[in-house]
Image (cartoon, rainbow, N blue to C red; front, side, top):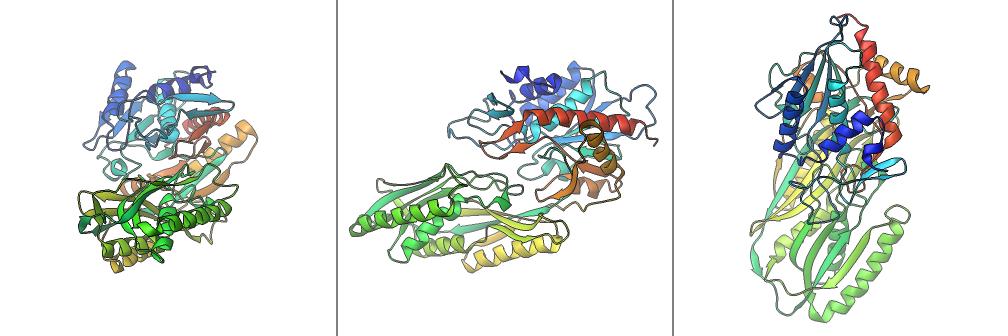
Length: 486
């Protein structure tokens, strides 16, 4: 069985088309052209704004012209993570595989986040059998790395007063709130020196971690590869002089790092002791993550002496601050049981140019003051370590409205179709809804979607039966809204 055999056929066929089009964040030119061509091919009214967002417009079913206008919203870009370091996300299509009830990609992220939302929106635009009022479909750019499209939405791009965000990841759940977030970047400037000639050099690799979404999966206790690397380096530095030559881990601010590595040297007479300490460390980590990180791999190999190393002072300050840096859940919500309130993700460590190391972290909270509190804690730590620290603009949270009309309609639609009352909840991940609400405070919004697992990692997969329920719920919502009067 292939994706072409799956139901609902219209949604999956469009999703398959989308996955043939490269769409990394900040490089959405090809997927934007696909959307514009799709609109032209199907005679759909379409417009774009200066930042690159695309909006499409479909008139109401005859007799439903006075119903409220519904905006279907999804984002164009996808997180690009692969088990194959040579996979070219800017040119290669995503290859999909059907495994029982699940659809996954062949060694890469699937792009269901948020390709399935795009596919459902486009299916609504072309399905002539649906009953609905006026419908607008909004496709935003760069959600994953900066919420750039939502933050710079052009005037007049949407006119509706109901917005359905199609970017959630759990069947039978309706989201009415989300966390706000801010990125904190910390730059170390170091002096480059020649690597000592009387040292023995190792490459320490962490690979195969589960990784995942730094909002939706942060509470699961998965390993952070950056933390595993610096934990070992810190332990070594207590007994040995460590010459750090290279460090690299993680990629995206909103993904838990699943791989990292460091190249370092120790006095040649201590190399056997380092191997012994490493084996002990591996045993500790395997014990700590037993039953959770089943594919996690820690590997230490002798490597050739690099030409350059980081100066010893910066090495100490970098290792100690990364070791101390918080990662994971900071606090749980007192208002919504089981909801993470505040968290931070030690997202990436990258060497830049000849003398800089950039540390990227991401903080989230449903309480604005606590979002900034944990961001400032991270700032204080790295400033003490001598780094230059800056914060991004951030994005606001979305406060739940338990009196929302569309929330009740969405809940009733699912229960009528499937006999289950969906959970109404908030999500710790960031959604674009808070930014839309700033520009259009009248909007009544919910977010929902099919079940996705391990998004932002090559293990990302989508539950096929949930897609059919998602499509059924979406079309029933449109029918029910069509019976309302503006």
